[in-house]
Amino acid sequence: MRKFEDWLNSIPLAGMIGAAFFTGTIYGREFDISWETLAAGFLGLGGGFLAFLAATSEQRANRERNTFVLKSEALTPTKDVIRNIQFTENTAGYRFFGQLQTTLNSITELEKVLVRQGPLEKKATGIISDLGNQMNWLKSASRMARTTIEVNYGVGSATAFTETHEAFVRSSLRHLKKRLHTLEEFCDPAYFLT
Image (cartoon, rainbow, N blue to C red; front, side, top):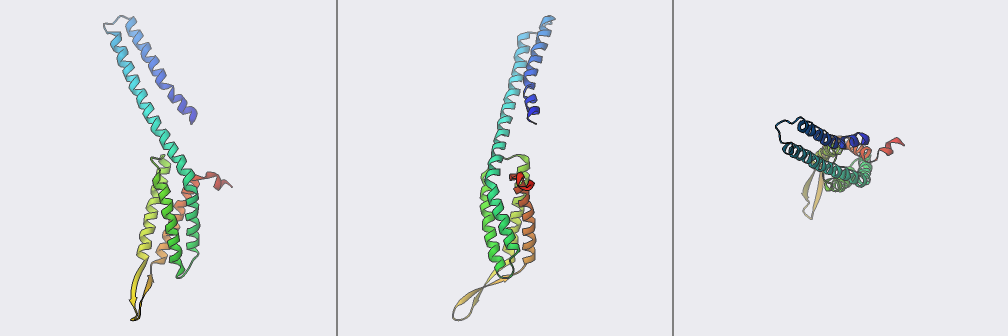
């Protein structure tokens, strides 16, 4: 792909040479056209095109740099979240929601890394958008699944937890884990080759 991009970078040069040849041809035939005006017009168009190419190449370079930084910073938090999800999936009973809170804390740390980056390449943007939607879905499901009830026993009060919708939260965890594996593969493709 790099050779193709190098070929595209020579197109503006070829266009300017073609415009100069065309201008020379018109001037050589002695049409009643001012060659200076034509040359200035073509050079202005060529300069504008080169300025457009420079701006887009700078934006592309920024997206590539931001994506590289994302790949280097997001791999470890992604693996931490996957590990915490696996622990949560293997936990049962009253400990499930305690481990879920640990998983949600690691998700928050991953979100800090993902949000910090600027504009990204299209593939990375799609992965992070899907992942963000799934993270928000899990957070909503976990808030809905655990409600706290204050119980007053006369001597003191205690907090009782009503744990419902555990299957719904587990399903959300499975879907999030799939999206995290996609991000992990994007950040470290060599990991899946071993």
